[in-house]
Length: 593
Ligand SMILES: Nc1ncnc2c1ncn2[C@@H]1O[C@H](COP(=O)(O)OP(=O)(O)OP(=O)(O)O)[C@@H](O)[C@H]1O
Image (cartoon, rainbow, N blue to C red; front, side):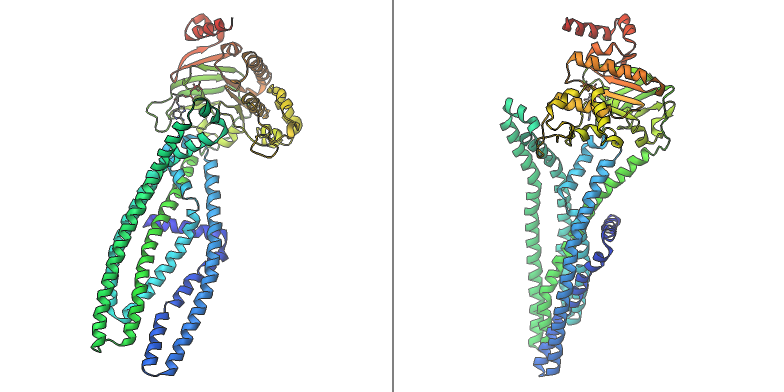
């Protein structure tokens, strides 16, 4: 009940926020429905007037009927129009809010949790449902008012009609079952729905298209897609079948009961114990009571649907607030680093992962240093990089920036002092200038700065592939858009990382994987020289790479193995130690000879 009230409040307050006047106008429909309530009574008056040859009564009945019909129709039209317009606006306002919350959650963990993704999928599957929720609230209000009035009218005609309320009880009970089945069906559909979306992307987008064709995966993907779609639809089909069956049984029971009550009243009318006008009213009210029972069931149904949908929205909002509360740090980052970045007993486990991906990591990255992070695939390098940006919350331990806990720092302010190129770099399909320039929003329109960043990231060659230079639209899915190679996209990502001129931490997570070893080496030496030149700021440069030839230029090499630090020291120290690093280094060096 509390959840339903919270959901109704959420929807109504959003409606008032979107447009207070339209919200009030929406209530006109309910008023029209109250006015139309008394129409059976006017008909009964008319019949009574006919039976008693009372023309005045007949005229009053006709006038009342005509006036109430006209008024309720007019109010109904105005209210319905307002309701439709308003629920569209409210739906749009909720969609915007969902997009805003999803994009602004400060960490990434949620995007890797299946629980979160299932909730989001259910929210997306019910797209528009939050707008419809306003419709449901208004309809429920109208239905409840109408049902109450109908019951009063029925009681005034003949108390036996109230027995039909009991005949509606099985329907109400059945509605509760249907609601439960529906919630289960939505949950069961979420995961196969996500799988179907993923498989559809695999089979219809250009990126994975090559592998799908080369490996002949079309049939495999299609078969899996069929089974995912079947898994996604099965709960809905099953729900529809059960619902129809139960509804038919409830209606049959209601009409059988109504037939019995009416037969009883006809029997009494023949004996003169019930006036004919009351019988006319009763016959008309049976139909109304039946539709009242139905709309009440739908109202219960709608309120529970609304509760579920608003519940998911509120869950998302609460989650956002919870994450924000956990990152409520307000301390500004230092203007420059004097000591460096210290990692203390850091551990991190991905959501729902059985084992932590990093554990017992303690490390000091001195101010002004160039650090190389190496290790085999899955060693935990990218995870460590993301922890330094505050994209994940450590499961244990902490990161200290010149002695200040990262958790106490103002996260957006800290991120404003980081720059980087990441393994999963973004293909920003804007113009080339904007695609690079977004690395520093304050200079996005400054062509000179963008050219400088391109130069520092060794990406000038990319300009030759761009017919309109920096003004070229990127991505062939846009008019006049140009597609780039993987390496060219990556060079733009590196240039983007060069846009910020005063980062305290420069993260380069295999940004050069698509470049040849010599270019990577040259680039890294350039970064290292730039980092040393900017020594006054104490910036730390952290490079993740698999190429040991590049690593030798770093001040410090950190070797990660299965989530732990295996070795640490300068290239020379690690070579002298003749450990795992030296072994891997020589292995690669032999490969190049
Ligand atoms: N989103 C995720 N959810 C669960 N586990 C993950 C996720 N991302 C990475 N992992 C796991 O965490 C471990 C470390 O992954 P990480 O990407 O940090 O390794 P890496 O050293 O950067 O590897 P690579 O050199 O291949 O990029 C791996 O065992 C990986 O399976």
